[in-house]
Image (cartoon, rainbow, N blue to C red; front, side):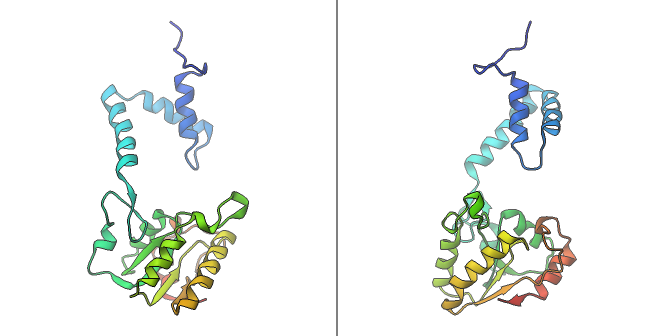
Length: 204
């Protein structure tokens, strides 16, 4: 019996591989390997895999304070009474929060922008969580903003844009003193390098 096709004429295995290929860093060859691997699942395993994606997509949302991902009203960091709320580390994505938390040295809180300014990609400031950051500052209690965006042209542009908005509010704005190569990605930096970058940050 020939393999069943969907309405567009594509084989289900091909459609599955195409979905995997949409993930960052996954080429078509890797996507095909993942598709074949998933086909080795039992029906129960396949259903659990699909349900985990659907459940996360429906229940995970932005923390109402820092915009990090959480399944509650506030993320665990914003809920933690031991954190220093006067210092806010501004990062591009939730993955960067995880990277800093691995250092076990930073005790402030975070703000996640969910992207960087990149006009060529159609990402303008209004598409980031900058308005939410300004509101946090306006609410009071914050003395320092650490701009911890990646040392890329987009990261630098975003840091400078935020700095120009924040400085008139009387807030100290610092930039990580990157002991990182230009173009490096925070997510892949080791804990010591990140800690030193935090320790030696500079005002901008």
